[in-house]
Length: 154
Image 1 (cartoon, rainbow, N blue to C red):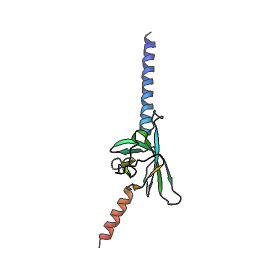
Image 2: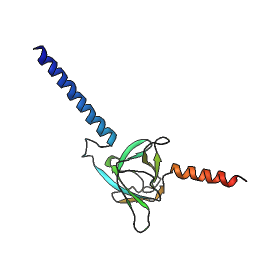
Image 3: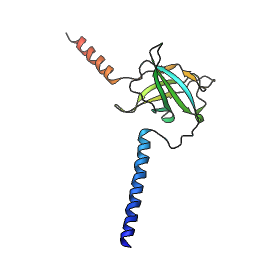
Image 4: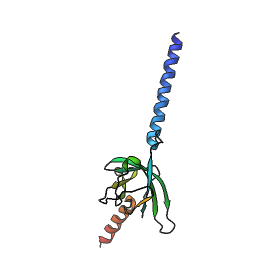
């Protein structure tokens, strides 16, 4: 009887551990168990996406309001095109909303930050955000700094 109780306790502990690992894997990957959330898609073009990935967060004022759904290169303009799925509850974003690719911390993950505009018209499914700011690439900044330092020396 005592062996059976011990086996049940170990089995329960293993089950809880497995569920915890699945939960953490979903949180780290950015996936959600709630796949039925309604969204609408908006597009933005950037000169340099600088390491932005699919499923990256789209935020406004620090609150996640959507996810990056697709990234590709525009074959005509040769710029990066980012498609974002914005949660339907945030359907009041103005048509002159601006988007910037930001970094969480110094070397953290890239995400898109939106800033609300002043227009009365709202973004709808298929709208494009025209006011964009590309990612700041750390390597480019270091190279500019070093070139500036070298050119200043006699």
